[in-house]
Length: 469
Image 1 (cartoon, rainbow, N blue to C red):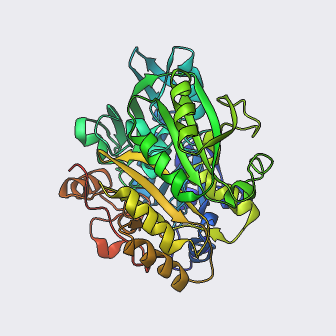
Image 2: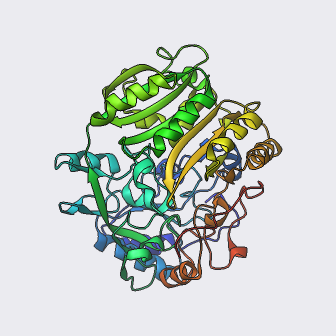
Image 3: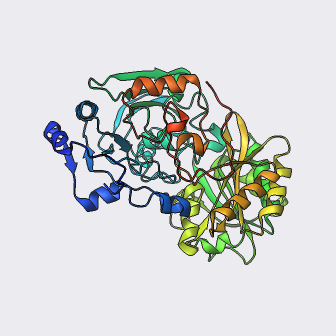
């Protein structure tokens, strides 16, 4: 443990209680498993430096998980659930030491039906999606980190991703049919949730028990065409992408607009993107391609490349160049680059995007990606700026807000401060029920907001105030 404020825990007693369950206290492995992709935020990289667990425990079954949870509850050792650690907010960095619970061993399809699949929560999403496609189905949406991210990890720490343009996000009712959650008690229980109650553990960073099983609705597995389309300027590309997102008759999975020089900074695209061009990254179902291609051309778009999914000259699936992966790709060229997370919606969405571009282009190139969230079409928008100080980040935030953009904070680490989950009395009651001793990822989401950790929570951002109670 590097945090001097963290008390010592009876780790030797825990190891004795684990029996044959796999664990490690090797400093190198503990250091790796105590981190996620927080280096995407220069603020969190500094604020969370040196936070380590005492031990990493890797149950291979639900029965082993129950044994770990019971022992930890009895010994009052905190637990941070973690799968692949692909989250961007330091969500799985242990604030108070204890156990990092590696859940990658809880993996596999339990039951596959014609319209749904029941899986263990540690199942990697890309592998699951590939298997589903042999049956003519696919997941409704995947994150850009799908090659590593697990279903439960994405539900507990993400929002949506590629496919959310059509199907919405985890917070939209119907995108999770049911789930099971194991409580943090001396005698752990598995609670089954369905309907709107499945939203209780959503985006709580594992602070409300451990999700063990999930039943997911499926979508048709279309033959997707990936394409890179050039426009002369960002406003033209953004207007077309917004109209594409509104066009229900064209089956689209991705619409990501990236202003120059992003097309140069992402080295896989650099050979294809003309100097000064804004690019649209899109995934279009094969049956919609003729209409899309003609429409894009009429709006000034030039198709630079087109290929079936995963077969493009960029050598990776196009979804790896969007959302969180876009930030990582830009940072390979510009290590100091970062973003704020702005969400824009409403009938005047196009005007707000244009205004945000006008006010923020001085900070760096803009991107906007479209998705449906809380029943509405929204644009996720921000400039890429080279981080200099908290004051500069606050300046970018205020510029976005002047444009009518709701800004949520990707540089903080608690559920409330990040601002992507509406917290109701039902959520507080669920937290108390599943974690009566306050041992689940402590500091991230406490019944009393005053007990949440204060990490990177100084930016003038907005908190989520909509959703389903």
